[in-house]
Image 1: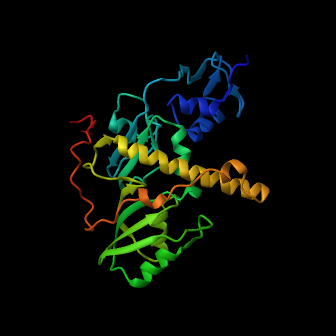
Image 2: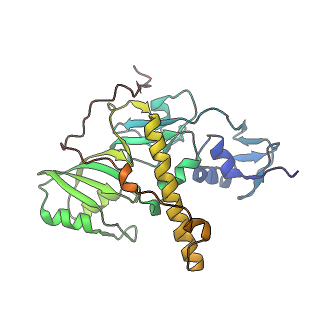
Image 3: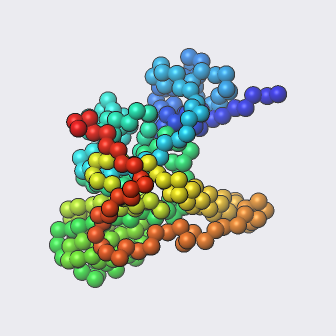
Length: 297
């Protein structure tokens, strides 16, 4: 029987070392070896191969994956490169296992970010075509006009990125604050959109990603509940089916039989109900254990 081969970047993600994208960067930088030899991009490994990063042997773990909802403070950088950035998210949390952030939240912003050791889930969440909701509360430096709300909602062309933002939901909370729900993840997207309309962001907080809300104090984290994790996987499963269908149509002009036969659930049943109040602070659920790993506590 032939040994099962796995692409090297997938091996690193399944081992909980990093995401596939970060794995590609490590491979390209020559920091990964297979049996002591630096491989080419796209190389596959067998269960008997010895994979190492910077000389450290990487082994797959049979332990249950970690999924954390972390309330990132302003000033902390979402990078796993602890040698370059002293105010990095990894050292701040100081979690006992190796974990990494899913996506980014810029240094001047605070709020919800997922942390995990499950590399396979990263691309499913971050893939722009999957249209996963990310909700933010934003404060700007001057009164918000209806024109501002309309322009933000209908999409803005960002010249420096040579991309237009997708239509999105934008609702005014008070004279200087609004709520926005994005399905894109362009670099500094909200700040760039506001700058285009001559507004400056003074505060930006992410309060929800998909079905999971921000409900822990700044600088603390909690594990996903079983219910949240089940719903998250259902949403990711459905979005993957949609992605496969769109890919099949683009390449063949019609969806594949396997995709056509897979039912797509009504995604709306998993979405959070609108908040009755515009306040983003919520009492933490007693069933959700809160942990704070700040080293100075």
